Length: 562
Image (cartoon, rainbow, N blue to C red; front, side):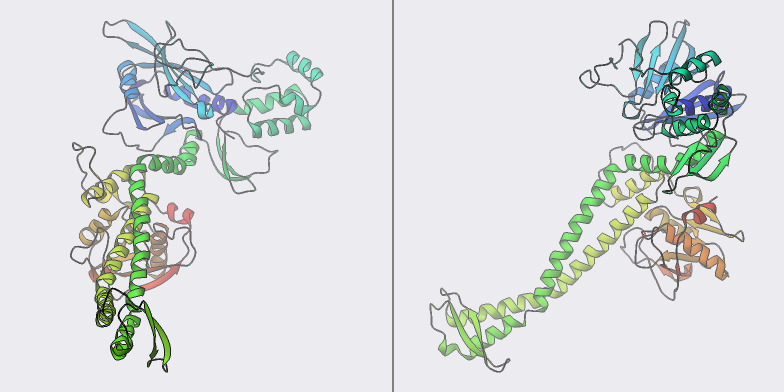
């Protein structure tokens, strides 16, 4: 079930009493398509998340602490000017459409009352958030300004009159009377055709409503179906293809498996969208970083291939020495101006070996040319090996950055950005932003089955701080073997086998191997960890380690997070 009309109707039964009458105290736009409105009511703060994301347009109350960006976008500045400090008077849905209006009352600089509407339109790629004055119906500003050439149905620019988008005709099931039901049933005697006349239902709702009417085609069945949306609860159900969906009622006519339920529908929505939203927000914040990382990884892979070819050529350079020796041994047979000569190779039972010659050089100079080429290649082996080692270390480093991005929360991207700036791969775009000091609150924290604490670094700087500064030397350190991953510290001196297995599973989950099975994880006491001079952030060496193979399970790992 998507955010269709019935879903929104149901959600508002819970949302309206919580927010209406509250004071709007803070507004910020953490990401391009997302707004957070903080309301204060009955001495409590409520954070309303509104997203105009084309794939997952939505709104609900969230408990997540979403980072307020350092620089506010223009739309937020307008919202703050007109709405901050205002009182939310009411929330109304337009029929059973995916349009919800938040009505505010505020005062301007002269003390005159302003009646403002924040209209949230959750309509796929046309989703938008529009602020307009209800007295003159003029748009003040909107999240997505649309060029007139892109939308000829209505003008979506500041100062234009606000108009509803084109809406499909249909029946509002909450307002249908018994007589109207009977008239409609006579016109559409088939349940499926009958259901098609209603607005606000997505595909699943239509199937479920049809099922109700096929069981009992009566006005009572219609009321039973629609009355569910006046008493919302949250349900997460799974399809036969193992895709999770969220509902505000429990459907009986769909082939779905109940995964989780909660009386608080906002809590269900917050849980359901958290990972999906995090991925989207991380993707938005890390776009610049990922471009750098991907380009560096591509360059380094090409460089390593080229260097390996050079190394292979250098290690197989004996042919040049042999040709030089043969030319010297048979110098009397080599005539000036020759372009090639076949000489018996005494290293291969005198089999003839064809040797190319430069006709402009003397026979002795041609021989010397082969010796020089041989010596140059032999001398390059050490240098090429050093270059391969350096390129491989840099590739591992950028792999670790990519893994950190894959495991990051939105607020972690700034730290990764700072790291790349300090390493010289990025130029700073915000010289005034203060770098945050690392502390335990920045880390991921877990509690094992027996209550022991596990700390996990989210990026290379946190990894170094956790292992080299925070951890007790007698604690145990975990890391996946031979691949990028987080440093994991089990705060215990004598861990049990179960502790080791659980901590290793956490280390495997926060690594490049999180979706693999049988992931090898090394573990050792912190006192055996060393950081080489000049090593990249996050890189350490260790000895005396033990290893264990685990298969990370997302649900098991995240259930231990605190």
